[in-house]
Picture 1: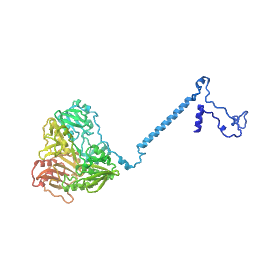
Picture 2: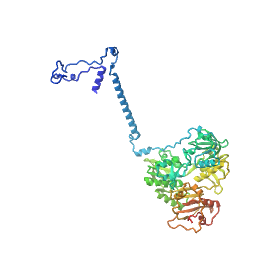
Picture 3: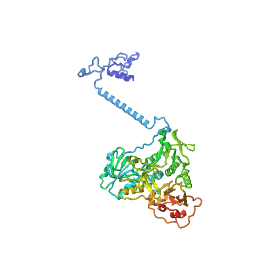
Length: 626
């Protein structure tokens, strides 16, 4: 450093530099010669003698005035080395800036990968935030949505899908606009709790494709993306089409003026309108009033594609998951997650207040059998129990149960049913049913002039069973189709007895129709099951996993001719028919591992009469395969 400082001063003319020898103590004179060793110089001066000073600048005559210094001027370097010196300094500066940028970049990368995070993995999980659920609006601006359309469908679920298919069938050049709050095009909900969980291909799950029980791959979406047209192009299409405005919400409908209002005030004039807003998953009152963000971030109300995607991601690493609810959805999810838990060593718990799985639907003996089946899938079933309190401790949820026990879990899934989306009733002066919920409609599913309602949110009058509201896929399909036909000029009444189905994996499934309530008296007739009596077998035979469609296409079944034989030991509840009675009249039927017999069940309900011997009625279903 001293040498550099001295050299810098010498260059600027502040000091005069002497040879190093002059600063040391005197010593005997030494002479140096360039004439070779042993030849003393003619005239040499010992190095101890002082040298002449080194002048900082000796300009040529032409530069004398330029280099001339004044008393107050700082010495300035001049001469031929000036440009080289500047070039060298610029090079040093570039190296310095490059090194500084490299250092900053390295520090940023270290910060990004958590090198400066002193917390352990448990602290990271504590700070983990819930996946964002913000829905992207497509189109981004409401001005790109047509302001006047012949057909307007409010809601983007199964009922709307079925309605626009019916409209296009009756009116091929129809122009249909769908307004959906969801960020996806219409899709099937049943596979979200069934087949999607049984896929071993992560890429297929990411793309929302799944294998049916027969191994055939299918997309979750009803139609491919190219089927739909852009909203702003809809009215210019000579052959019509279907456009879906995703992420938008209709907040008000004026039935008299036939105008729908979006959340930003944008108005859409319609000719015919269908309300098919569906339902939203119910929550527990305890969780609705919970102000702890750490708790609410670890609760999923399961219903939609984002719910599936979030739960799928969480269960890749979670050590434990607890499901609240013992109905169709809760039991299906329990079996699906139990299968995954066997692969990842994840503990799966299921809590519900009933005595057994699907205890509100199945008779006790069959509910108990189903509970054992769920347990065999690796699920810890906790019946007759409800959640009393919940807290966040040690980076996980602590559940206080009604039996006094505490339970730790990483994630809570709530599957306790849905409630109809009827917010439009108040803003649009539409009538709702106090007992069943939903918009009140007539037999043609009409709520007001040129305004129909279909799907989960419709409350219709059943001539056999009274006013009802049904929350199943088959009802959404059939009611949506009938509403769509009536929007094109038909005047058909809704007389369909909708069915529903549930699968506890590929080996056990059932279908039901009518009023199936475990509080009603039941009569069950069972037989030994075979390899053909499984959901997997029926999908393999028909090539279709949507059983409301396979039942519609099923061929008639010949009744049994022989006597009904009770099942032997070990054959209990392999397959069978359960009749639900009210005043000794069959009002509901469950087909347990019996498929393609729904037409027979509808016929029995249509009879609306008392039967002296239900064993004879069971022969109509030919469960013994005669």
